[in-house]
Structure formats: C-alpha cells, structure tokens
Length: 324
Image (cartoon, rainbow, N blue to C red; front, side, top):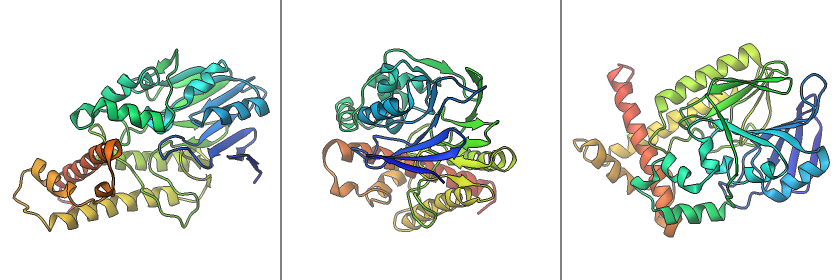
C-alpha cells in the first residue's frame, strides 16, 4: 500500500485517488481526527473533497499546496477533535457541511457548550480553556444535512449513515462506488491490530450504549454487504473480510460494563442511581481524575459521570430484558 510521510502527516491510499490522512502528533489529545481526501477523479469530482479531516492549519496548508483547493468539507459530528481546525479548509474556499444538531458547533463555542449540556457540570470558562489548548477557531458559514441523507457533491453521491450512540447526530460515510465505509468515531481507536485503546466513548447525556450496540451491528452489516474497506477517525485501514473493528468495539463495551459492575460491589447497592454514580465517581474508574487539576479535572469528571451513568442505565435495561 502506498504511504507518504509529509512532515507530521501520514497519508495512505485507500483506493484509487482516495487517501486516509492522519496527523501523527496532535498538539493536544482532542485536537485532531483522521479523515479522507478524495482527489480529483473523472466522473466523480473535479476538485478536492475532504471528509472529516480535522488537522492543524499548517498541515491543511501543506495538503492544499500538494493536492489543490477543496470544493467541499463534510463533518461527521461536533466533538472538539472534529471541529477545532475546520475553519482552515473554509479559508481555502471549501463549502462546510455537517449533520444538523452538531454542525452548529463550528460557528461558536457557545453552541458547543450548549449542544452537550456541559452546563450541568462544567463552567464555560473551562470549555474556553479546553478549546484554546485544542486550537479551536470558528467557521463563518456552514450548511447542514439530516443524518441519513444522500449528499450530491459534484458527481459524487455520498450516503450519510446515522451512528448516534457516540454523539447525538453523528454520521458515517458510505462511498458506494468506491466501496469505502468511514465510521467516524464509533470507537475503533487502535493504530494496529494488537494495540489497545479506550474503545466506544459515551461520555455525554445524549449517548446511549443500547444505541451504540445497534450502530455496531448496522456498521458491520453495511461493511459486509457494501464495502471492501473500512476507515475511521483514529485508526488504520481495514479490508474485508477482517471483522476486528466490530469484535473490538463489542469487547470494549463488555469490559467497561465489567469495570462498573465490579465497582458496584464496593458500595451500597440500595443507593439510588444518582448516589451510585457519585460514589463510583470517587474511584477513578476510567480516568485519573484525582491526578488532574483545573479545567481538565472538571471536564473529565463530567465525562466519567456520564460514562458511569450510561453504563448503569444500560445495565438496568439489560437486566430487565432478562439477558443477565
């Protein structure tokens, strides 16, 4: 497989004139996401089309210098690692599109704050600091689409696939003609098969483990039936018939549930749901919060609160369904 290292960029060919690009060393953990570049191709696109490639402005500049200016930039959802640097693509003339309900986060940090209801546990000043360390800057103009909509971009038809367990209106991209399925941030987050990452992430009020499992099932079905290659926001290129992404994501959810279940044995199980969450938060089950200070501790505590609460909600549904 062709591979080019362009300073701090890793560029790999997925298929003919479609590249997966990664910024190798982001400035902060939530600053960047891998994405696809569709180079000009006869009867598909005359100009560069960029799919969810959120990299620092200086590397956007290098991409433009090497491959030319973009006509479209398509966003998958509004988390910080997918919105921080999109403004740089806009500067070069890209029309910015994204799913309604989260694309608005590109316009103003207040949208980002309200979108995920940070106000329930995080001050806006902490979000401002978080945005600053990630290099966030806003866009000027955006266009929205409904998740599930087919986008017609020049001569390309791009099927958006709702994958909302991770984020309220997240989508994946299915390129039917090229048989590529990009699953965005579903939780396949390893750089090689024997690595280990965090896995599926559900640290917001709008997240759902139950929906996550449905998303994994749907993504696996689409991959088997309609794609030869699978890409994601924080991983490597997977080729049929490899099913590791789906095995990995399901296993990670099970492991996280086990962490919560084991921690429950250490507290009073007669507590109400909210009190259980508060007791489990003291244990640093998922993040080393006790070693953190300032805005990061505030944000990570918020995320872990919802990871634990979503886990307990799912555990209760799972128990009531008779699966336990």
